[in-house]
Image (cartoon, rainbow, N blue to C red; front, side, top):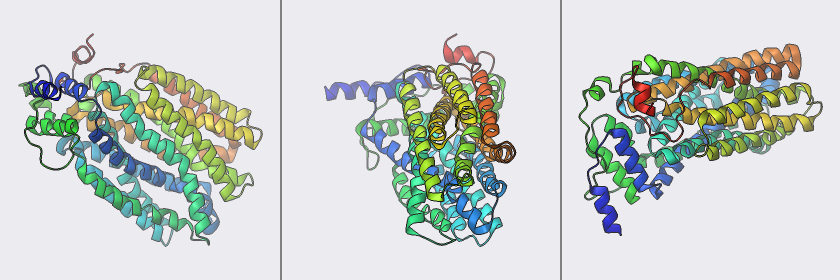
Length: 479
């Protein structure tokens, strides 16, 4: 049996690169090597999530120690997420030209260095500068993770694989971030105890950098660059469950497809802003701006809102932790639905639930029990949205511009997440909890409308070698 499988794998494949790679992935399935790659990528994503929550965790302490207001705390968040957007765009350009894997380590080094600067910051401007550096590395890290997870798996498993990023980040990371804050504030005391939150987040980056030496380049990128032998070597490593060491007689899973269009368009960043791809980019940018604005407003301001209502810092963090359990449930639900339901149906249903939970928080949350319940539902719906958009985005682009196209969408979300908490904070200061969550509920309505227009990608192979243009839709989706 093993000999027959080896002979089958060694048989040259024909057809487009998309069909060849999809066929190879379907034949080898999900191996132990896949799981190792997933673990190494998700380990970094988990600590990215803790870092993303650092402003919300330290906000009440900074308010007491340095006398910062909600606007100044929101500005720290704005610095982080503005830089995140820039990091994603820069990373998107680099990964489409030079590859995916090296940017994993580079972005980790950047964000770890920024976190260390935050820990020793003597004043607010230096702290803000540190958050900017953190954001730049953080943005590139998540963008590369989304792209690599999409490119290592067949259509059957791709949605779930990408969904695991948000299970780890928005789910486990966001839920456990308040617990991390509680632990730090229990172990360390004094007005500078917030520094330990940033300082301790530098340490795990060293471990992650060690693990990621073993993450290979994706076969899809290698094939798109004409490096067919290297692509076959990586697929062979996946099939044989051997990420390091010498590989003897690698199988031929894919063969070169002579096509001048591929050479002409390979790695051109403008492809994501042309023709049908431009329409997809704009629509997904609007959708992700709505979901990120809602999510980051909740993450950044909820601990401060609870403290303003008379709860102690640790008590507020405990309530926030309970609300974040909705994030974990939402991410797990989105990952489960990714292999079972079309993307647009999931997005529409989650947007409706988000709108209803936001309005409930605005007008029915009369005590802390209802605040927590509606907060759980709010986080549940918004993380389903974010997770599904993350796995939807790379499916809309061919390999030559997948990095930049996906990064544009994620960058738009980061900008929205950085800027909108300023609006949410101002609305809260003037109109309280009802005004803030009514505003957030409107965002879900806009999202539900715009996601109706991109093409459905559920259970479709990733595009590899089609030129953008008027005939692209038919080439990808068989219409």
